[in-house]
Length: 436
Image (cartoon, rainbow, N blue to C red; front, side, top):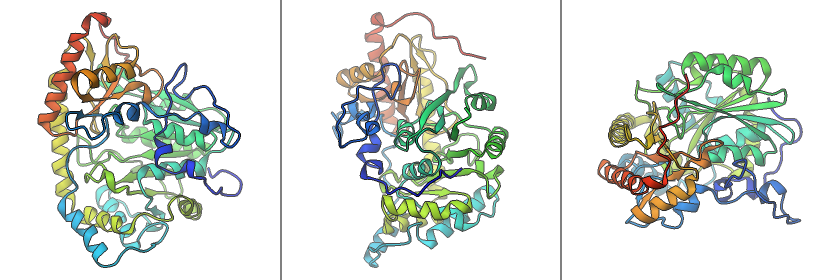
């Protein structure tokens, strides 16, 4: 499960930040481009280009005229009690280095939170606090794969996941969720069928960005048993665990895992507590990964920002009302999306079970980047192009419904208006029939 050899000193191109936003405009593959060949730069780094999100968004970022549905955040400011906890830590002089794996008080708070939520008794030594959930995914990938290995990603997927594995040296396989009458679906057998002899890691995001697909508990147990048998590191991104519309939380791999399973569960504060700009996450690993995780963390940012960790403690200990309020806000946003897009002859929408995105197909669209650029130019609505989420998604767009309901409704009206204005240029064939 842990790749062989000395743990590498990671160069700046492997840190979260601008390089980690890079993705590629696909020709035949979402990560294929003409190599620029500079002797000082590794070829895999040279293939990185600005992704479709930032390619669209950075041209109008901060423009008040734009209804921004492109990024994975709402317009709710972090609650005051969380901000005040961070301010108090600053005023108390908490501006120094802390333990690489996070404040013990925060790790203890995470343990209590997970124990209460899932009915567990997690060893706090399994918990590490990276400077974002994405950093947690990156470190997990670094522990699992090297040149010549393969990683299998459940797709559609956030583009940075693929880049993270590639920078670590792995080749990528994907298994795509299916569009059915009941929504987005994927059988465990389909994931297992995508595994090759040299597959060293599987990545699952549940609830899923961008589709809202949720992996059920029995399926999680079956996949984890397979990874246990094959010694494959399963990386489970559960950052949307509280943005779930059929209960207090989505099913978690932690509920079916043994302590020493080849499993890294990644989570964070951004989504459940409106803390996207704080860059604070947590991971639960097998105990034997703790030393490797500490060594790799020191090569990234040494440790998460100490006063941000104070805010994290406040969120975990007093944030259940915030979680419930945001979930209801997102539930209403999902209903607004359903009202505006369901039944339109040129829009094929599968309703999400979790997270706060819709990933509709616009019938007749063959270039999602050009489509969202057109919507931005003509209607001042920011969307994410589907191609960025892996193969066979270029007819799709992603929109985030975590915005205020008034702005969301206006953005959806403008989107539909744009589609109808250009209807003659789109294929009027009916939506692709869903699979069983």
